[in-house]
Length: 66
Image 1 (cartoon, rainbow, N blue to C red):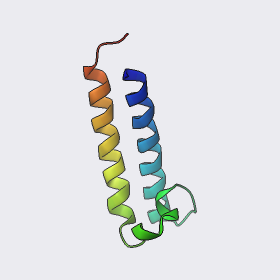
Image 2 (image 1 turned 120 degrees about the vertical axis):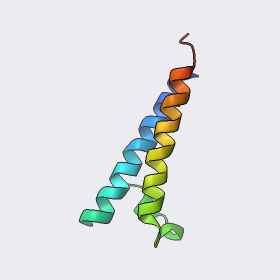
Image 3 (image 1 turned 45 degrees about the vertical axis):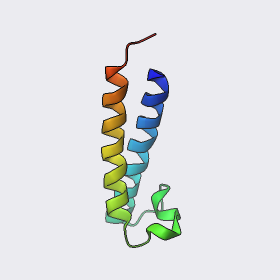
Image 4 (image 1 turned 180 degrees about the vertical axis):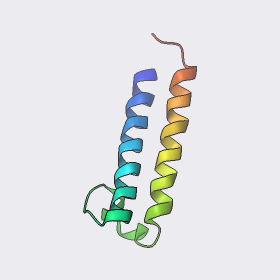
């Protein structure tokens, strides 16, 4: 379970950073810019993904390994 949380946290972190990169540089990278219902909320969604990644990493850290 710990590895699953870490993988999900890593994916959320990467997508959040790529979404912020898209918002500030207009590069067409990441999943957030491809979702139509997030058109005006790209920055908020990307920040939420980064916060979610931090929460997932904290949850994975609190789990015992093995």
